[in-house]
Length: 111
Length: 111
Image 1 (tube, each protein chain N blue to C red):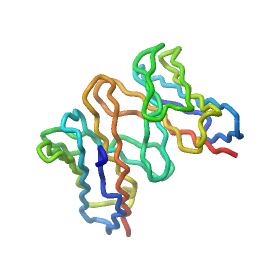
Image 2: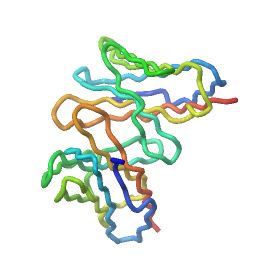
Image 3: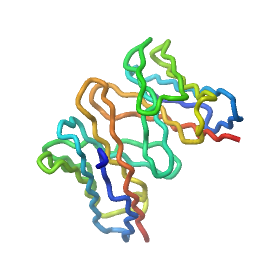
């Protein structure tokens, strides 16, 4: 079945550590997105990519980085510059004018 | 004023009840509209797109009022399984298909 796979489901980060969240899709979608969800704040856009080798900052890109070397993959790195990284991270893709398809998310916690 | 506003609820209704949610948006140039459903600690899932002519999918009916800049979701014959948070989502004009998310309306259907 086609879909989006995010891994890991749960991730624990130590202070000052970089971590990378994986997002893979087999839907042949061109556009991919990373969102962060915090309680009471809704979904906020971190980065998005509309084609391979191209990506743009969203509303809260500081402290994050991405790459889009393959159509299927859009990994997100949470760097040590992100001071409050504990959140639920959601990857999504879209084709045409339909709504997003989301992965099941990664819960990141700073320990 | 927030770009997309929803009543957070919670809405507590008995099984079989009809419940309606409204959502207002501030950008009159918004192009596309969606309702998503999110269960606790899960990813959002597309419930339905909202078309200008209104659309119905089983017990769910969505309406768009461009003049007043609001969309609505009506759920008839509520089921226990309808308990979730319902997210109103609006797409701005342009090519990036960036979605603006409401904070969601919480629904609890009680036996």
